[in-house]
Amino acid sequence: MNIVVCIKQVPDTTDVRINPETNTLVRDGVQSIINPFDMYAIEEGLRLKEKFDGSKVTVISMGPPQAETALREAIALGVDEAVLLSDSAFAGSDTLATSYALASGIKKIGNVDVIICGKQAIDGDTAQVGPGISVWLDLPQVTFVKKIEEVKEKDGKKIFRLQRMVEEGYEIIEVPLPCMITVVKEINEPRMPSLKGMMRSKKVEITKWTAEQIDADAKKIGLDGSPTQVVRIFTPPVRQGGQMLLGEPEEVAAKLKCLLKEFIN
Image (cartoon, rainbow, N blue to C red; front, side, top):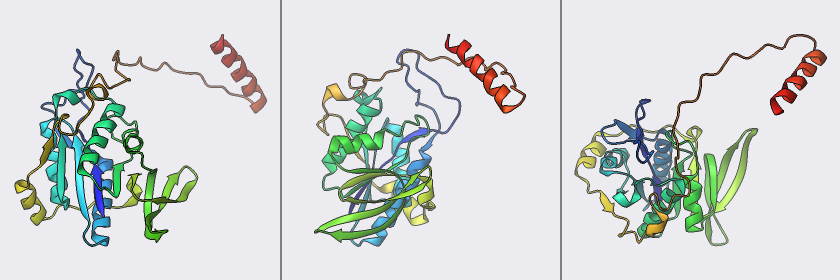
């Protein structure tokens, strides 16, 4: 089984700085970590590898050269190969442009059975990149997966039987491979890197691809390929104190109705 895990390096700080010219995050010189939700994606990829002989796990990320650190950390955990998409042409990409670039990189890797992503990144919280990748690659997707129950054969194809988390509990879904899934933290407990893995991570060669090397359309990456852009950044005003509505339920409901009318008008 050929498994690809998408990871993102995110700032390990609440002191977020913004470039005033581009309205994008300043990442240079900022301590970074692997997006916490992506750690569960890595772990699930490794568990699938251990379950199926001959399987391989590749991590892929898009980011500046410093993102190589995150890829080496993934190697230390037991990942086989790592790919970094790094090019100034990717700068300023929104979730659509990012998913396109990652999908192009995955297409270049080729013959992928399953793509695993964390449910969302803690710096953006959009949960859009994983589903975006599946759309670009025309693959079925299942989001918020909390458990892979089994992998079985059906009509000559491998099928994932999954538990998908919903507000009321979970759904049981079957999806054919190849597919894309996003996982939640309930799916597993990420492992610690081994000494052997840490030694290997220092020596392994990280594959680095530019936009040209993945045949990315220049109009679909970076700021030019991003239909959503940050126009203005500001600190929201401090909330003012509200008011308590006391009394019998009918009386409170009447007061609330009046306040809502005033707000609407």
